[in-house]
Image (cartoon, rainbow, N blue to C red; front, side):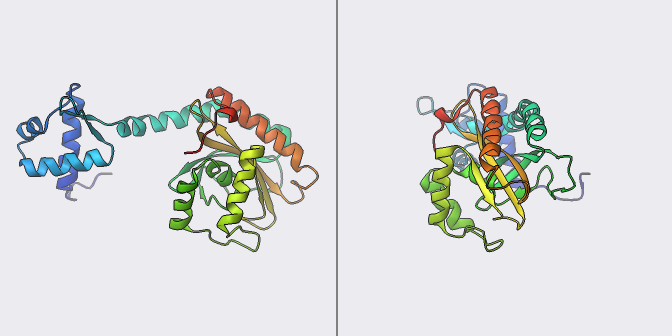
Length: 263
């Protein structure tokens, strides 16, 4: 419920007003037109516009010197629709994977340095995992996370590690950047990632990346179970099933590992 007594932020209000002006002006607006329509000082408009350009919400046409809405707004507007489409297209494959493996199936996307669960199909077994849609998990110690960040560029991966670190969950957790990079290289080679009790003792997980038509790893699918359910003996066959499901979902999006690139 909106608190009518709470004051709005003036700068944010002005910035949003500029975006609304542009939404009604397909040809774009010049700095002078922003000033006339808003009634604000030119210096204030200039600061707001420059900030919005730097953040990707506006772009400036060099030929006409007009400002137009940036692609970041389009990306933000379509992101929920893209996620809904992904979930809908993936659902039959997630259900089939659970039936085939009798293990709990998850799907996740990479968001703000973590893997976020956007899909779950619970296995009909006594072991119930404490996971839920929206749960955020670290990327360096989970199969889903490793499948997602395996296709980051070395520069972006180094930046991620430097900023957030590699926290230790137990004695199996990878805390070495060199070892993590070695595992991620293996993920790119075999197209699946493995979590061998690295996040939680007693649990293992196998995950494979899902690619879109641009070759980007936009999500990952996994099976999770106890160490008695995922063993050295059945790891290979389970990995094949997970990879097959990921390939099927990728095909729904027009993607494949052959198109994969590092971003």
